Length: 627
Image (cartoon, rainbow, N blue to C red; front, side, top):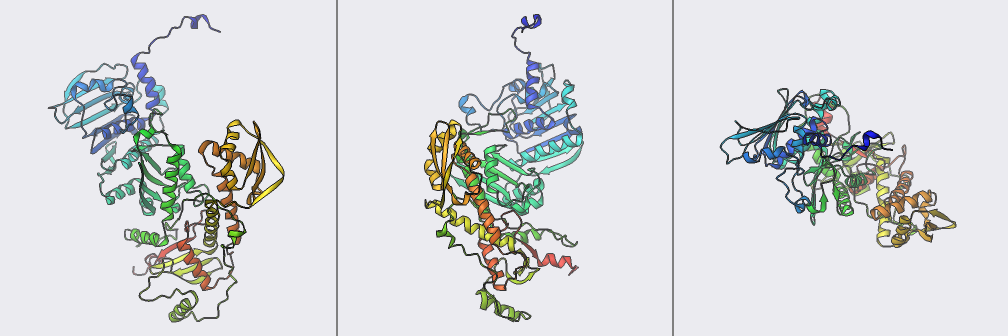
């Protein structure tokens, strides 16, 4: 019910200052929000070096100086108007954005909540000119100034005229952390730009322009840590109009938080659920529970195929062909990890050792090791036709005769006779070397050319069997072989929404290939008459419903594959060699050779490492040899 007071309220235009302050509420969350907009403008202006000066974590002073193209005198006053920009002129430009900024609202919003000045000098202009604004007074006046080619933006006393907003700022240390992270995020996407960040006159970060691969990796090391770059593998794949490049850390460099995940789309750092799902799926059975992968990745595609005008902060985007993007990112990350083998991992560790200081005793911690991941194609059947190809060895199937291992000659002769893996002057020693002992019935100790390999025999054998099972199961599906099915004496009747009924009809052939017999028996109901034999002990109603939801939303289902993989993992775990089972040297070497060739061989199905490497140099340091 309208009151007498509200009855006489009228629609009116907001004052420009108030409109700017409302916009500032969306764009300017904290000092780091201001800094992000100013650095993005400098990058768009073609700057090759950007200097950032802060005082009191940005609440007092934010000053950004660049050597970009500059703004002509006659356009300076327009820069502080809302929706004034040089980056788009029509709807067609908006649909193919290639700059970081484009809305034309940031400077007006910032100026409305601070004491603001903008000084600029293009190359062909004799002197620099400055324009100032002060919160509620948005009237501008040009004055000559002294500045070399480029632009300087100064933001003083942020939120001085909106004290309620200022109260929400965190402690200086917290806000400074956000500011530093802002610079790092932008520095990772613009290697050709140098950065210098100071706070209260003290230098915090200094990054030279990086053009060569070595210079880029040096920047990655300074921003993301040396441990990250030592464990990271470089990606550079281009298919059609999509490209994925950057650094992907091995799963051993996982994090307890998702604080080292940088994903850029056409140079813009984004958070996207399609991308996040693709990466999560790629790492799904190589990460330990509760851990997060680390990466710095750059995804480029046709600008017309991505909508960046979704959110005021421009962190969110929308892909026009999300399924295609998802599959591309998923496949490339999996394939990159699948190509990692022990030989490459050990070489990488040896290279990083050259820069390490072993003068002090090192703690016996896990070195970044091989975490092999692979693109998993659709699952395959595990009926009797295929289980015959799975031959997990029984540790007791071969008993070796007593052999003299006390001499090097005797050991070498044993290897020659038993495993055909003789070591000679013209034969390269395998990456994981040769078994020399079994420790406590749990670990295999092996010697390679450079040091010691320790293998968790159960974890390694579990991964070997798991990959073998998946391969045969997936091959059957690829060959359109119907897996073993279990007919149900009493069919499951499930009530569903119309869109899920439509998914049953649309994907009927795929469901049959997976081993399901599902019939639509009404406008809102289905009957499940047969299921894959391996899933007979599963919660069929929940599984079928989740699967159809996936089909409805994403054109395929990951739930079935995930459930089948869980079953295959359980089979592998119960079939693999157990602790305290004695293995012959032949059997231990067989595990070593198989793990060298097994995809995802660096970790078991639960994300635990299967092997670690300790160089002779590191072992020497433990015993202070040569010191």
